[in-house]
Structures are given as C-alpha cells and as structure tokens.
Length: 277
Image 1 (cartoon, helix red, strand yellow):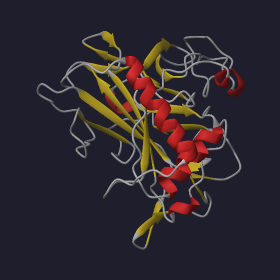
Image 2 (spheres, helix red, strand yellow):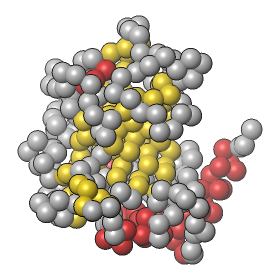
Image 3 (cartoon, helix red, strand yellow):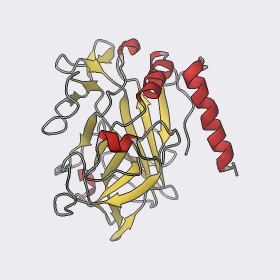
C-alpha cells in the first residue's frame, strides 16, 4: 500500500512542476486536470441558496467535500482561511450536493473526484474561474430524469456509460456525474437564480464555443462521486427522488495555482497527472 507520506510527496513534486516547468502531454487525452477531494461533513446549510442561515427547514441536508469549513455563514474570505480535504491544498473550493439515502440510511460517498476540462475552442481563450464564483448545476425541482449532459448515473470504473437513471452495477459501486456550465457572462459571480450568469457551450461548426451572452469560456467542472451501493433500488435524496440530483460549487482556489493549471494543462491541450488525496 502506498503510504500517505509518499502520496503527499508526490503532490508536492507535481505542484512544483506545475508552477515552474512544462508538463509532458498525454497522447489522445482530453485536456484536463483532476483533484480528489474526500467527504468531510453533512450539514443542512446551503451557503449559496440560503446564505447566513442555519435553519434546517430552509433547505435540505447536504454532503460537503473539499473545504472543511463550509456552512451557511461561509464567505469567500472564510473559505480561503480554512483547510481542505483536497489532494492539492491550493484547492479550498467548496463542493456539495444533496445527501443520498439507501434503504433509509444516509450514506457517505466513497470517493469525490473533481475534473476541470477544456470543452470549448480555442483552448487559449479559456480563463480560470474568477475568485468567489458560485455555480449550481442540475435541477432540484426536476420531475423526471435530467439530461446526461448535466446529470449522469454510471458504475465505478465504467467511463463513458452515463445514463439518466441508475442501473444494477453488479459488484461495482454506483457513481453519479454532474457537469457544470463552462461559459460565464464575464460580470457576475452569482445571479438571482444562481444559474443565469453561466451557460453551457453551443456547437459552432466542428467545435463548441460560448454563446454571445456568456462569452467567457471557463473550465468545465465535473463531479464524479462514487457511492457505496450497487443499484438504484430504495435510493432517494434529501431533495427528493434520484432525478432531483444537483450540485453546488464555490470557487475558493488559490488563484495563482488555478491560473497556472489552466495554462499548463488546458491551454497546452494535455491531460495532467491527478492530485490524489
């Protein structure tokens, strides 16, 4: 088994590479970088939708990963001054989604993997998230399965098999994926509905680009969350049926490191090594 000290040393080495040297490209890879951020806590707060509140009746229970301090009274400043579960300590972002229940029992995610990909062209136009950006993906009020372009269900170690509903994964664990919009209006770090300041890219010719009202391309953030059960029977969320899955993100990265990763990985068109926790 690889020791925790060795994994930390590996992260430090790659961190130094990202800051100061070129990264060798991975052939035929989607330009991306990946950070592993394990589970930290459950909480009924929602610092984006119900800021400055601790009232559990205001929303529903959430599963928090990444930043260790996230709660209803979080601010960008408070997030920056607290620790993180992420494999790269510069990532103090707050990641959360509704609590998941299996047979009436609340479950903790086994893994939390967060991918930052290049989905628009030209790659050189992609900008890092601005500090403090807030984004919500998915619809907590959905009345039927959502598009797999936003919410997908799959099985652990089964890439590219996303479906709108859960299936029997046999001996493998269920995982779900949430894909966030990667086009920003360039002005607002939040909006009244917490979504209209962002948009998904559109097809332009043989590639994807940002629409006119959201002209600034940013990385596509995708959650890949592994859950400790094998099928979708007797599963529900704190927000309702499985198809009400959604997720929130609050950018509290160390901006210098985020900018460097966007440049060295996305602008360069390569898949960078992962930051494992």
